[in-house]
Amino acid sequence: MKIDYHTHHVRCGHAVGTLEQYIESAIAQGMVQIGLSDHMPLLHVDPASYYPEMAMPMDELPRYVEECLKLKEKYRDRISVRVGLEGDYIEGHEDEIAKIIEAYPWDYVIGSVHFLGTWDVTDFRQVHNWEGRNIFQVYEQYYGAVRKAAAAGLYDYIGHIDAIKRFGYRPEEDTAELEESALQAVAKHGLAIELNAAGIHTAAKEMYPSPRILKRARELGIPVTYGSDAHHPDRVGQKAEEAERILRSSGINEIATFEGRLRGRIPL
Ligand SMILES: [Zn+2]
Ligand SMILES: [Zn+2]
Image (cartoon, rainbow, N blue to C red; front, side, top):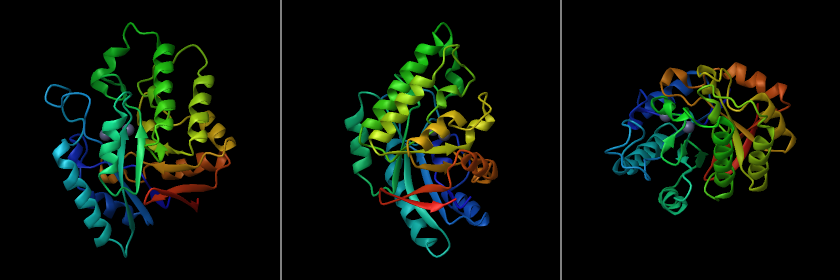
């Protein structure tokens, strides 16, 4: 894999390693582009009373971007560093998110749904929230948020589009229509998606998205990029060979790239 557009680092509080270590890891693997995409600071819950170690504090964001830009310059002859943000989509907080995005010269912004209200559905400490809920209704709510994220005009691609499967909660009902509506919104608004390798290590036991979603994305002409979602420098490019195989078997032979918020593509 020549690129990896989804990485984190120590600032977020739950990842290991400096930005530079992630870049070095990508160079060691012969990558030509590395995307830095740490989590957006919390803005709709109070970081002081919420679960700790979710994201960098708001006052750290300028230093994050500054360090990314410095490293982009420092490594320019060895690898193309792309400066990104994994921007949460939080329903009802679009204006605040827009302000953060507009304040910095991003190469790309990932639109990820982690939050349904104040519940981060990707946080292992909050899995108890599934208790007593109708699983299909949670899926409906989740994919509804993905549709709104796609329509928000804030993002370049949707991150881990079926992350709701992370802890293995799967409804008995077929979710194909929900997936379809999310993909239709992605296509309509000209966004891309990612093949995110991190799903492999979860109870879902497969990458995000599922082969079914990926195949449908291909049919709809939705561009796809690759992201390890590494929270450790050693995980940059994780499962890249498997990801390539999955992409090729879905009929995808090029991969989306992002610079200055414009999408490009390179052959797989
Ligand atoms: Zn993270
Ligand atoms: Zn995420």
